[in-house]
Length: 106
Image (cartoon, rainbow, N blue to C red; front, top):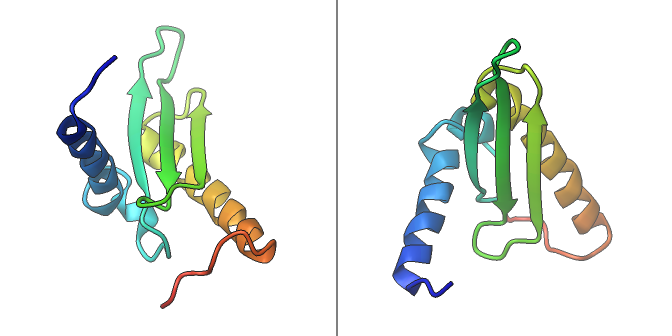
């Protein structure tokens, strides 16, 4: 499906903003890499809603993507994002340890 480059850039910018100023921002404070992501809550007619988060990073040169679903976890920002951050922390640390990427400068 053909999509104009400016549309893709706009969506990517919005996904990056989710982790800076949006629903996932609180969980990514102090994170050493820029991340793009989206949180969500899926209605569950059988009980508590399901929370989810998808994300990738580093934003400008992604090497990691995650998808987290927490059944009956409620809001994705409070249930799935913290798990997504932990997964990304572990994956980035492993990549750095293997020499596959450079640790960010602080």
